Image 1 (cartoon, rainbow, N blue to C red):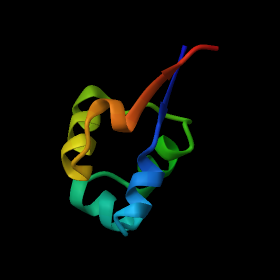
Image 2: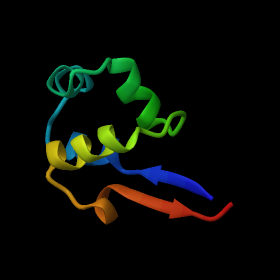
Image 3: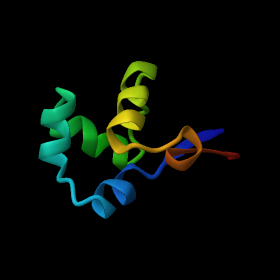
Length: 67
């Protein structure tokens, strides 16, 4: 199973740049980019921060897909 996310879609809807998001969450822009491209899954701590930052639920941000 793969975890997919809608971070990029929601971030763009809210008009937030990768740089701004990275600064606000105290992570690198490269980390945001890797998560958005599904090359890296965030830690539980970072996932919770993303949910709070984007003001969305787990179901809105993450989906579990079967291979």
